[in-house]
Image (cartoon, rainbow, N blue to C red; front, side):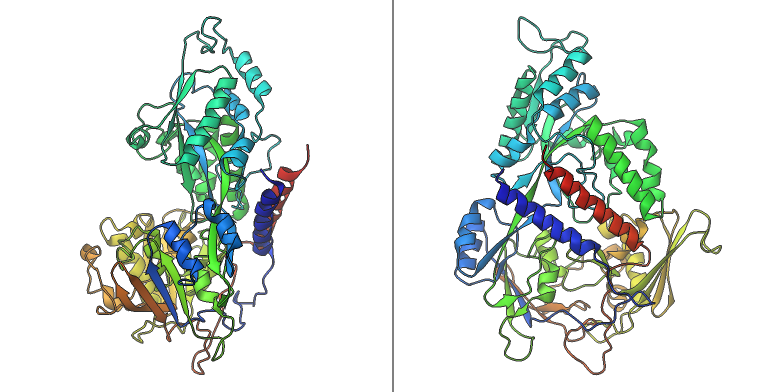
Length: 602
């Protein structure tokens, strides 16, 4: 890997972490009171342009201002050299990895998996396969995540340590058969490894070739295959040896550690692909899921990762960077989001003309999108490109800022209580109380109140098979306390409950109460002919299927940057009362220390 690109990766990560742990001025109510800072452009235009080469060409020809998806690194040099275009790299909140069947002998032996991990040359994968656009990774929590243990362990699997790997196998009794030249299992039986490529990409295949070379160095018979549709075997725990996959995450939550590798899910469809079972790992699960303090959750997450890295049921190969491209000649204040790069909500919210004609407001920000919007129903679509548009229409109690940190949005404050805090909360329950901003309205002028919030969450929970309600099954009650205060009571205690409800889009009660919970999936508006009552900074003003979608600034937006004498503005705060700022700072410092450890010379 080139030193320049590697240093660039760490510089990007370092700047994000420094921004994340910087203290914010907070009033006694926990809310900043400075002026508004967003929604400057008049319109956002999403043009459907299929194919990366066509999107790059449109950017070069000044037909769009930004490419609305990550771009292949093959275009990096072209974009870097183009006049007026900026190409930026964002460390991926995800990775490529190899899952190992822990139910199959001798792959079920920790010694075998650790030997393979030591022998795998992750540095070569990053340098030769990724051309330097990746860094080695050991933990299943990406190193951009403050919960990651990356760099905190006394060892790494970054470089090929073949001598260590062979010693481990020798000690465990994997002897070399003098006739075949390959190792046998400790019970004396011959075995071979089928290393399958589940992803259709040359990068995946070449990564598996490096893995195959590692097995060759260990004298283990193996071959690389590209099977047809291997996923049913993964999803339903069928027969396989090793398989290359990829994972990406949209938040920094790590409660999935309690399910993804839980022993009781070793035979549960769609979970625990390696069929890993470990009682010590399981012992941390309750603390991860049900602790209410950040420090306790952090401790459980770190210890669970420590076990996974040692036991190696999966081998994380790399964390790569993702490439975004935009034009910097007409607009400035483009935002690099930790999950989405430049093509994100915050770019739409903060970008404005470099040479405004009438103040800071105006202009049309032009996106490309490779696919047309598949539905304007936020409960139906599963398309990330559709969500790019729909996220501009609706608001939630809490948002994630460009660093992945929580910011209060519709909520002005959040309070979490258990029975120990408030005797009126049943023992073992958690009650969340959100106080809302008081100037939010829907685009039809109707006030947005706690009744809308309570209705939305109840609607999602009660609508059959609604994807936004699947994680609300443990909610005991959701009700408005006043016009601007809502309570949500869970039947369990957990640090993660605030995200379960806080991130969900709020929909207008006076519209959806006429769309019963049984008909949630049948609502399919086609704006602007079908009016969409929304609350976000922009709303749909024009739509031509498979050509473009146009959004226009919503003058009723409650966090408006445009001065309106009758509207009092309260800006979002970058930390919740629920979380301890000092703990987040400590986590950030620990992650910075991890970066130092990674770059420290041997």
